[in-house]
Length: 224
Image (cartoon, rainbow, N blue to C red; front, side, top):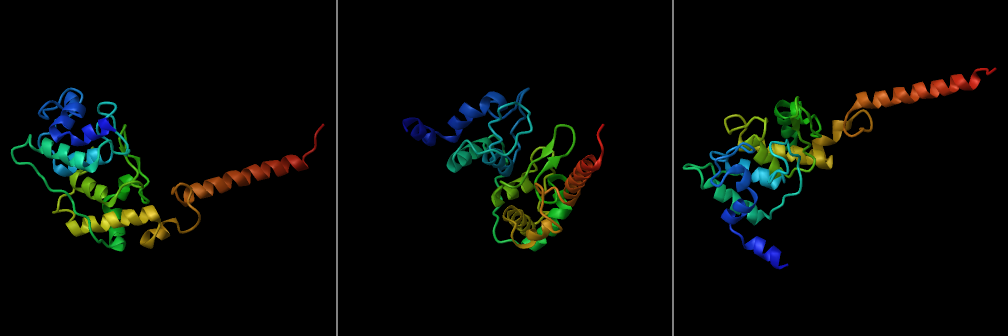
């Protein structure tokens, strides 16, 4: 209990020194095992903490979405401290509100589905890079990712996707998670097998059919 209270009382500077400086450098200059943080936006820094990707267990590993290791106030404190490394930091964070999931589906198909999959389950995008599943992402994290462009994901500025566009996409992802509204017809045509679609369903049916046929043939065959 005392240790928890002590951790909560730590400043962003102290939290950074304990959890980040050994890889990213004392003033965010980077090292041979981690990139520099100078020039990173608030959305980028906060997203890495909010999705549990940082602190990283292995340098330069394409981390997956995990539970964050800090409280929200701690993440805010670390983010503010890292931004102090920059002369003109980008402190903007997305403020997701409202949103039209029907329009979001169209925007998702145009800008996100190629990597994250039509149903947001994620996919390999070549080499060791993975577009993660969005099934556990909050609407705020979706907005952060769109604005930050983590990893090999492109960064979508307001000249490409407006704040209203971000709201719509985030709400559509939320609909995918709950299979409500316009996302409910993503599985039209049969029960989904881990959201992989009718091709996988047909393959399973084909395998069962062939197996049944082989059993039937053997049952009517003769033995010597």
